[in-house]
Image 1 (cartoon, rainbow, N blue to C red):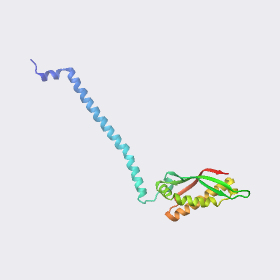
Image 2: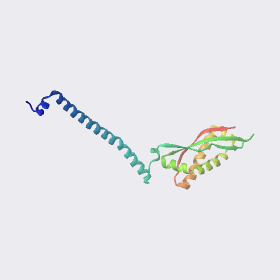
Image 3: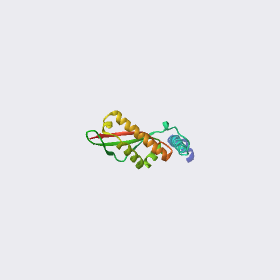
Image 4: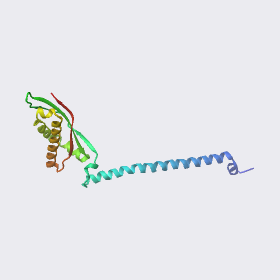
Length: 172
C-alpha cells in the first residue's frame, strides 16, 4: 500500500490547487506592491507643493506674476450719492479685489475695513458726469486702485492689490 504523501504528490488535482494558491499569493503581493508604489508616487507631488508653500512663507521672495490670482469680494456693495449739474444721483458699486497669492489674500481680508473706507472716500469724490462715461468709470477704478495700494503699502509695506474690479455698477 502506498504512503499518503506519495498519493498527494501524484494527485493532479492537488498539484493544480497548489499552483493556483501560489499564483493567487503572487498576484496579491504584486497588487499590494503596485498600490504602495502608486501611493508613494502620487503623494510625492504633495510634498513638493508643501515645500514650495513653506518656501513662500519662509520669507523667500516670490515673483508675483507666478502666484495664482485670487479674488476678495467686499462684503457689501458701496452705495453713495454723487453730485450732478441737474440733480444728485445715487450710485451702487459692487467691488472685487484681485490679489496674487494666499499671503496677499490674507492681508486684503484682514484690512477690509481700511479698504472699504478708502474706496468710499475715492468714490464719493466723483461726479455724476464723470461716472456716466466709460472713461470716467475707468479713471475711478484706477484712482481706487492707486489709493488702496498707497494706503496698504504704508501699513504693510506691500501694495497687496493688483486690480480693483467693478462687478456691479448702477447709477440712478
